[in-house]
Length: 66
Image 1 (cartoon, rainbow, N blue to C red):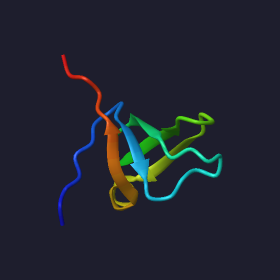
Image 2: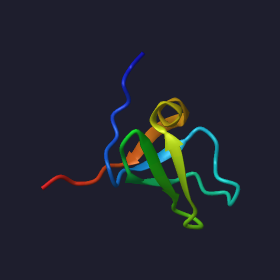
Image 3: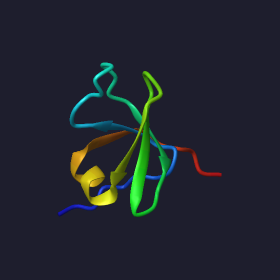
C-alpha cells in the first residue's frame, strides 16, 4: 500500500463530502489522531490516523515550507 503524503495545514479532499456540501478540509492537528476542519462551515472532526489515510482522496493545497 502506498503511503499518502500530507502535512500540518495542508488542504485535503476526502472521499465523501461534509453534510454542509464542502469537500475541502484543512489539517489542523497531527499525531496518533488527525483533526481536520471543514473549510465551508468550520466544523472540526478528530479521526484516527489509519481511518484518515483510508478516507483521504488527495491533497489539494500544500503548506509552504520556509
